Image (cartoon, rainbow, N blue to C red):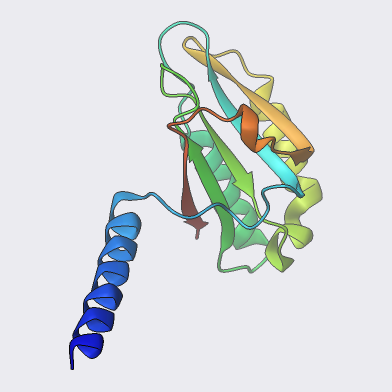
Length: 145
């Protein structure tokens, strides 16, 4: 009986930790750590914040609609610095393979636009070095629809 009670409390503790991790956005490492990511969009700061993400979200939404796709999976890696810097890392998936060329062109044009607060940097086939990541950086799943 005591063994059953101990294993039951251990399972409860594990479930509770998983629930806290999911609720706070602290996820386990993304599946592509150590492998090249097809597209990484970095939101960087010049002085006092990062560029608005609205244009990026609109671009992705329009491309999904044009190609009759319902979603695109990505990961948000943040915070990457003291002024709100973060990265959006796109997963290698069927929807991305369909729109990758057009998405790359459009994100590249967005990264060339001058922003008051910061700039966008587009990386392709980018391998994330986990030892170089800030200790506070956390992975959060994003689903573009």
